Length: 244
Ligand SMILES: C[S@@+](CC[C@H](N)C(=O)[O-])C[C@H]1O[C@@H](n2cnc3c(N)ncnc32)[C@H](O)[C@@H]1O
Image 1 (cartoon, rainbow, N blue to C red):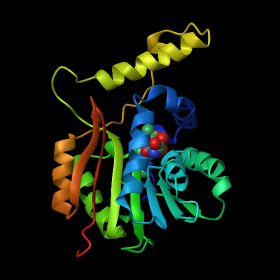
Image 2 (cartoon, rainbow, N blue to C red; image 1 turned 120 degrees about the vertical axis):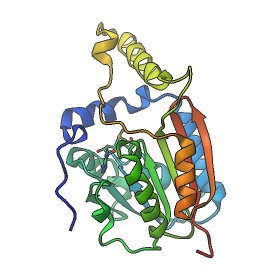
Image 3 (spheres, helix red, strand yellow; image 1 turned 90 degrees about the vertical axis):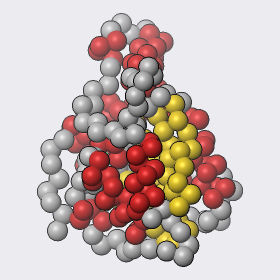
Image 4 (cartoon, rainbow, N blue to C red; image 1 turned 45 degrees about the horizontal axis):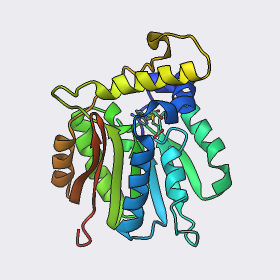
């Protein structure tokens, strides 16, 4: 059985709504990253008939997969997982147009039981956006192995996430988020300060992209790549070997 979902910031409706309402404004280079993920999933070539969205929020990543170009004939099914009921509520509202082809599941990725009831080898793709950095290193390693098991041979895992970096660019992602929020505030004539518009998320546990690639390889993924990197923003993942 899954453990009870703990109280966390993301389960507070105000934080969920604040993030979702400003996601496109706040996140640096989001359009570029989403465009790259579309190209990656399309060029990977494997038809996506069934996929998982981990830490789905309002289902933005799932929406991206449903709307992949050139796949009008494919009507994928999706399972969206999040431990925040306010987020899942927003996902159900957002995805109504894809009616009947998805289910939402309340689950905590910190709990190895989160995938109970999902069959191994069933998913052609697993996507995740800005969620896995909330879990600790050791659990990330286990999660990558769980994701590998859930994927069908040849299936792809793509994670758009916030990663740890060192050196002079450390903190640039957060700085840019604050600048984006302040710019949007001024554009609409608001007068709130940088501190007031800042997005509060104190539950980050990022690890470096290099470490996570290594953990993906150790889990058994191949074609492990960092597809995109800008300061703390990264898109990375791997493919389940066909012969696994
Ligand atoms: C920054 S939001 C991103 C949401 C969405 N994937 C997106 O790209 O907009 C992070 C999401 O991860 C979820 N999350 C964080 N930790 C989680 C956990 N341990 N288990 C399940 N979901 C989690 C939060 O509830 C939230 O919906």
